[in-house]
Image 1 (cartoon, rainbow, N blue to C red):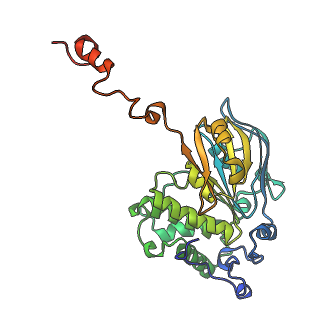
Image 2 (cartoon, rainbow, N blue to C red):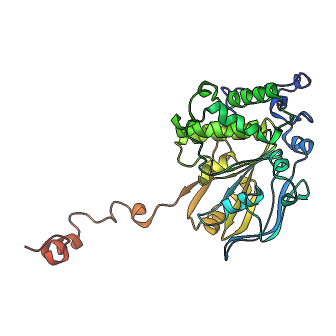
Length: 335
């Protein structure tokens, strides 16, 4: 995260390790070790899909997909439109039921667990969410507390504290009493992320959270989400379209095409020119950014753009003179 990113409050037991996850936004079971790799094992929430077959009506979208979401890391699903990214995310989130195969949450079939129980472990931010008209930011964020509330058992003080900390972490406190529908796109998206944080889940799935946002706003959001994984040990799975942003922020990339996972792994291993061609049919140079050490791609220019000035037609070219001598070949009306 950037230096300006506010930190979540820590419990007294974590004062010696500032990277521990805040008890205010945890399930209260344990602190998160500062090491990202061991944080996930301490949390113990695992999400995986095995031999998933998913479709809409008679059209099969996912065909035998296997995936295990890396614990304590930020994983990004990449692929061209129609490759099955959002369908896979919705299936893992229990929004869609597979026609074949299983989604396992901590080793158990996710469809055999209650909705409330799943919501206490897994948070989902769908694509393009909309809030009811007139809903304030505070009210929206408080909706994340629903899985932890029961008619006969509510802790209003704790709920208010969790909401407060979620808004502070996402930097939307100043908008707390404003209506969500009066905010900019980036501000609204921060509010939705705050709601997911208030849900207190260690697994967070987000479908295209940066779509239609300015580049700076996209970067700020990805910095925030990256901090959830790297500073708090949360497990994040995102669908993104921007190749370079995905390669810059992902710990793991999963590349899909035609309903199948073609390759997956660390960006420096799988973000290659060959894979970009195979997955996206994109001709590109891939290089390593000397400052970040992350791979980035530069699409190869098309034939016309790659021509030298000597190769491009000019006003003196024979073709133009020919066209000028024969008005019937022009697009304008004949004299």
